[in-house]
Image (cartoon, rainbow, N blue to C red; front, side, top):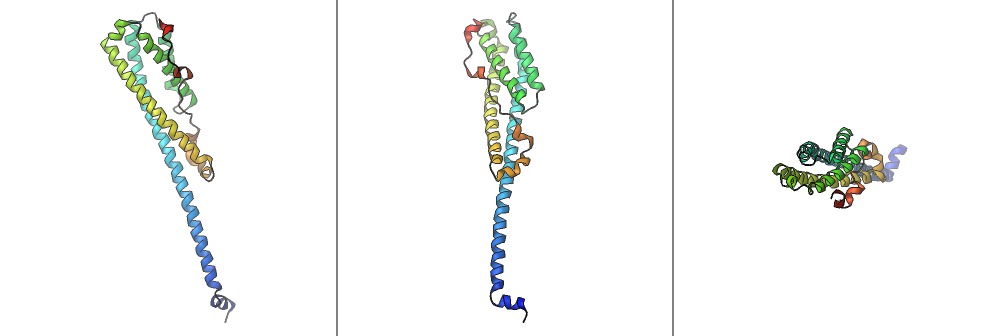
Length: 203
């Protein structure tokens, strides 16, 4: 009888089999955990991209609305050239900047501040304020701003979730799966826009 046969007959073979089964189960568990982490990172990345796309849609609506608002306002606010110029310049900067970049969101935040100042300024011109086209433009503007605010919250939350999922081991193993999305900037509001607009500046 060979040594190998004697080994299995004495029970050694069953011990090896048990060890192999245990090792196999552990390997399956590890692979399952790693796969779930990979899927989670990819899902979070796609969610962040989806949220960013939603922001882009709303910002484009604002870009399209601004020229119409300024055209109407200029008919009644002939001496307010400075704010018109600022808004036009910031709109141009925001449109040229890359989506998700810090410069993009900074320009958007400053543009938001100037647009709010314009809305306050409109209050000083009763004829403009009551103009039907301006009333409709302001209503559309308010709707767009609400949508931008909602999209911003969704995007910032999605980006935070993505970053959290790749900062802690073993999720950090899949950092590369997040690509450049993980380096995108948060869409924060301008510090000035967080404060109520000082209407006395325009009175």
